[in-house]
Length: 72
Image (cartoon, rainbow, N blue to C red; front, side, top):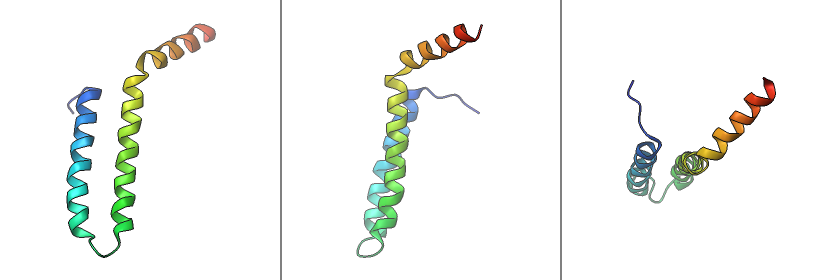
């Protein structure tokens, strides 16, 4: 399995969201649009999680270090 950077993962999720927006708009037009919106909302949540992880990387690392130091 290949390792991908957080930025590459974010790019891929953004690409997938754009594709799904286009597909779901055509697929669910006039019927069950809530199903497509449900799946898009979950992908947007993935994107927010990845962005948060990237933006808070140093704070998370520091938090982990502090927990290890207290445990030692």
